[in-house]
Image (cartoon, rainbow, N blue to C red):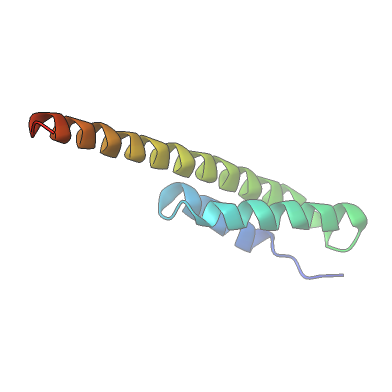
Amino acid sequence: MNPDRSAIILVLGVLSLVICAPVGIAAWVMGAGDLREIDAGLRVPEGRPTVKAGMICGIIGTILFIVQTLIGLLVLVLFGLGAAGAAGV
């Protein structure tokens, strides 16, 4: 059996919500892989709830990161258009 990585996945998921959103992608991918391995009997099943929690935090962190990025791009475009209009271009 492969070692339990549930704590690492949970830490990455929580960090994606609090500090660094892109690590949510890693938590999401690692969590999905570990859940598949748990279902196949290749990993210790006791870590399943922690893996799920970390993966869900990673999904939420990733979605928030995408939304923040899109809002940031929208603000840049709107300010760019506003600045171009004010300059008479």
